[in-house]
Length: 245
Image (cartoon, rainbow, N blue to C red; front, side, top):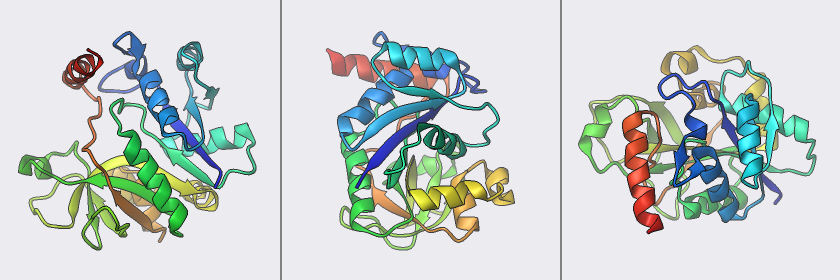
């Protein structure tokens, strides 16, 4: 099954400006993510961005990047434009990988891809177990509620995505913001206007649920470590510098 990984990225992050080009061990964050995606070896990898500086950085580090328009509401809308520009008509699956998670587990990428191949799911994503109960009430940690419990052999349906909850439970997990779309589903997704639910919660995946597009969830080996603040960057640097020793 022909697959493409596209990593949406932009410089104008409100909380940590210039985030994709911040250096970790001498390499930009976006290029670290690109190399992780290549390691998965499931298909070609591109970065989709509105910023020429990101295009230049990715290419200088041996990657592929494509320039897109500036007016996209979400990363998924951006990857759809990139897909059209690339003109790859034989692609069956498109994976949307977050550009601010340089520690993404390659095995998790492979696992999600395999689940999409062996099932007929329209959209697949990942989630991990919540170990620290404080995370249930933390808005920056997106939670997914699934129809059945997650395990290595299950790919249950997502019932909802939320930012905060006072309730812990067996079917509430830490969402990992990776999506794998079937081509026709991706086209349908971007044809819909943003839903009020999506806008209110700032969660693009709610557009799918609000339009009766099912999302299935695979269990991730690790909880995601994204970079949204300077403190996150310092923590990531320490981990990655330790691993490189």
